[in-house]
Image 1 (spheres, rainbow, N blue to C red):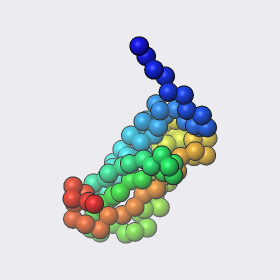
Image 2 (spheres, helix red, strand yellow):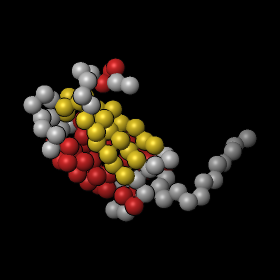
Image 3 (cartoon, rainbow, N blue to C red):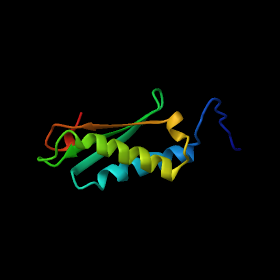
Image 4 (cartoon, rainbow, N blue to C red):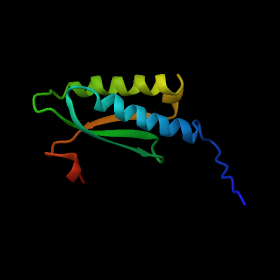
Amino acid sequence: MFFVEVRTNQAYTETELETAIEMVHYAVLKMPEVSEANTTFNPATGYITTLVLLESKAPDSILDDLRAAARQKLIDSTRSDILDSISVSVVRYEGETLNRAE
């Protein structure tokens, strides 16, 4: 027996969401200023948040570039209106490693 869950008011599919999270994560992680990244999605807020550990000399201003790259990758990997439903946030983590981030 198969069950189908019907969701209303969703402006994106599960496949789009999975793709979006992965694409945003790797768009940020591949930037040379980023040492580590951890990406999550909050369905209540519609935010994909990537917590980043930056190289020690990277200025905080790089966060704007990372957000822009993540948003563009989100659009490129899904569809142009996805930002109407999902937002992207990139936050600098100040610890030594994300493996111990709380």
